[in-house]
Length: 181
Figure 1 (cartoon, rainbow, N blue to C red):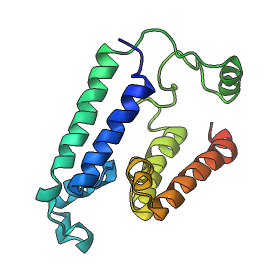
Figure 2: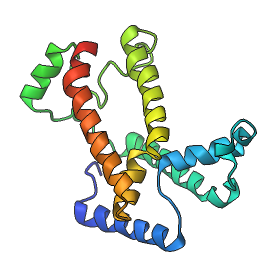
Figure 3: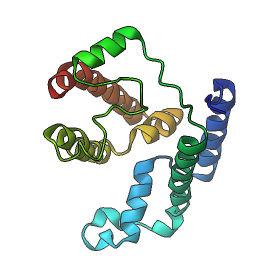
Figure 4: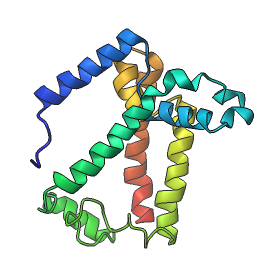
């Protein structure tokens, strides 16, 4: 099986999970899991932010473990060997920006271990990772937490955060990314 689940299966399942989480009073999001891991590791000795009852939040470690195991299973046993079907205009644009063989692999060649210690790799993976972590903390949650959980709870801060994520993504894609590639 190499096709994603259809929306009419995946959507109701996500809704069911969100209903159950709302019913049991829990939060959804990967950044919550990172908070739990830091609390377990003793970060509460460094800052009051991590002084939480991590035992009550340990369930979200199962969520992240499931996502990791699911990703490994999907990438090893459910991925197609067929190249990604990109639009010809998209391929031409990526080639003009220096990305070789777009669509041949799932990730562009710039996301490799060999490219990590280049200037481009440091910008994409190290600086980008830092900015994602900083933005997650500053926004009070990650994209999955705000977009799925926060919006389903009709939280105004989540709506503002999601709009900010989209605006930031568009700005980086059109104004910054062309100069880095």
